[in-house]
Amino acid sequence: MTDVAQVLKLRRSDLKRCAELEQVLFSGDDPWSWEAFASELDQGHYYVGAYLGEQLIGYAGLAVVGRAPHAEAEVHTIGVDPDHQGHGAGKALLRALLARADEQRATTFLEVRTDNEAAIAMYRKHGFEIVGLRKRYYQPSGADAHTMRRPAAGTEAGG
Image 1: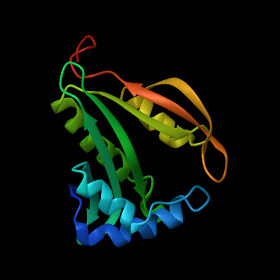
Image 2: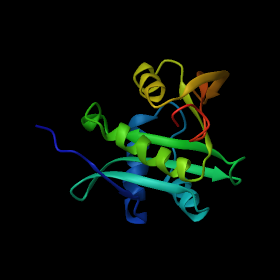
Image 3: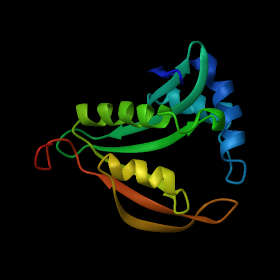
Image 4: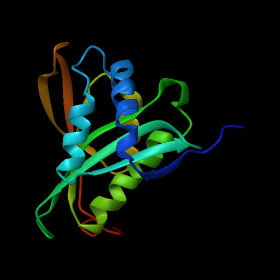
């Protein structure tokens, strides 16, 4: 039986762990540093962590600009320790971000590697659709990214 991760506000003391996970998860695509994560927090963006006890196993961040009905949210990052992938931590992190976006009635956007089928499937299950392609978006690998969009809460039937 796998323990379920608890999603909490990301602690500044965990930024070193975030940067370490970035190195593992995104080594070919300019992983974020401690300073990049600190800058995101300093700018007031919404960041959460997935914790098993005190251990950070994943993180996610969202920026919201504007106000309803014109608010937009951008998922800046989601990452889960490879040893803990496939057990719901990524889904829990995404749901926390979407709850924040829904509070602001924001249309939500994100970019995802075109070859990341597991993430694309998860995003589709949460109401995202592919709306564009960014060629060579990820550097230095040159991997392409899909731009995906999820409508603001309340703008779709049943939403």
